[in-house]
Image (cartoon, rainbow, N blue to C red):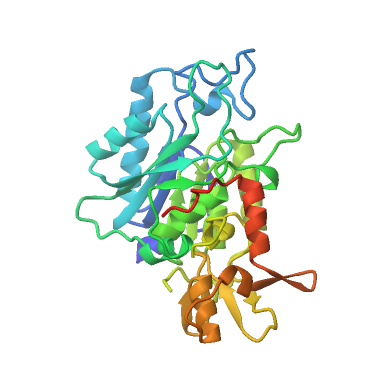
Length: 369
């Protein structure tokens, strides 16, 4: 397709998202992930009770002062996204109670067809600074096809594999972006106020795109979507108007390595205590796609896929299924059978599960049954 060759692939473009999108050819993008301004200034929620700005926030970042101007901007960028999407493409947009309902109504007015709303449950939400409302512990993602007749992509088996062979639900329990993943400025403050965790974008892209698909992020921020897209071997276009964010995004993408081709599949191929899917460890970066794991004696090996499945020759499935096939056994506890290498020693995958639980504070119901 000529439009594909005309695209500024694998680049972060600096500028206004609407103006930059107007320069791109129609029908050239497979998927859009959008994290637009939340409309916080209009609601007076950029500041703490002492009138200090929340880390990483400035008024220019969320500059709308009335609903009409916010709605007009929303309509503009959504219209451009729909023009750029291929007929069977999909769009993801994330927001909170400040803006997601207005966005949902506008995208329906423009002809998008809503497929799901997904609740992102945060295990470690920001507190309510003023103490006058419930702590806001979730955000909403809307997943929509370009139109009602779109033959959109949904990698059902990859999502099921990511969730330990159990059908993925629409409530996702994923921690906020913290630790070394969180980008900070020279003063140690958060560089971007709403930097999304890579685990969230990993799941979004794994669910709705294939290798080499083109992913557009019109509000790229510090580059989470481009970085995850590169790692999963998707092509990407990021747009960001803020110079500091764009610079950080470019550097972040340069530091990101794509997974090996062998471990890059998102095709298809038990519950244990604590009930955590192996795919969650992959999402959180505790074990990387493309990693080779072994049994204790190194007699057999398998490669970890980005959806949490294992590949062993022509065999593909969960850690339990592939472990059972490797032993010609009716069942297998993959957590104890499979081992990863660290400092020359083999450790069971169960060690990573303990680390995950300690990091996320995952409750007993974190497996999405």
